[in-house]
Length: 275
Image (cartoon, rainbow, N blue to C red; front, top):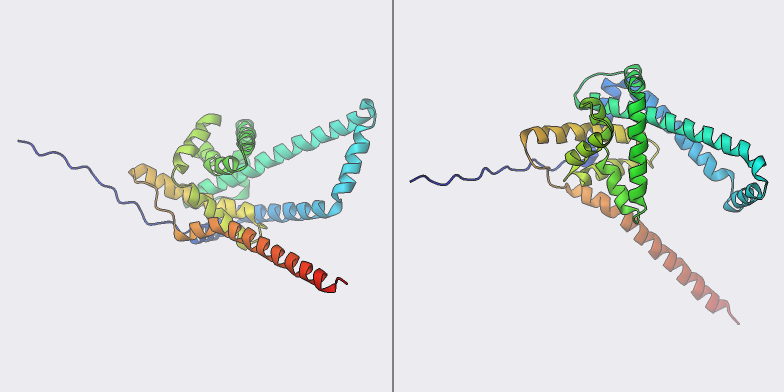
């Protein structure tokens, strides 16, 4: 009489600390891919200063006036502006594709503990530019469409697609195939992806978010692919990841309480000074 076979149990690996994951990734970036790290950091500095200047340049009323005056003009007078807008949008997509490609290729090399340079990452993206452009545009379209469903699905989609650019270079996958592989690899590990980027971005006030993204996904891509090869489940969520998730809500609650407190003080002062 044969005895029934026992099911093989797999013990999940220890939880991944999101803070040290990103910190180790940043250390690896500026150790094994120094030139790429410096360029990504410089791009961060330029984009941060540009966003800061644009937010301070015009008030909402001034922008509303400009838009109203623009659409009140005859269509023939608007054509040069539409042409300029098309050029700016095209330029932004091309630059965005190159930056994302450089980040993804660099993250792939970091995940394999291989050295790389900005020139190598640039050439790898440029030589596959057409296919990577389609992937980059499609990723943004899909994420935007998910965002229309009350924002949260868009945030989830953003992290589900985090590995699409990396598997594009690593496994020579294109468009939906790269996206599906990213979805498969990140399944069960979205919270760690979220916290490894969000925690460090909150600490650095989002001034080096491109560096943080490259560093964090490189480390988690290595961890998740190793788990996938051995058939192990994703590790449990680290307690620091739950703290990271709660921090924005705690911050909003504190701000709401402070505003309520200030309104209460103003109301009481108004009552005491009334005749």
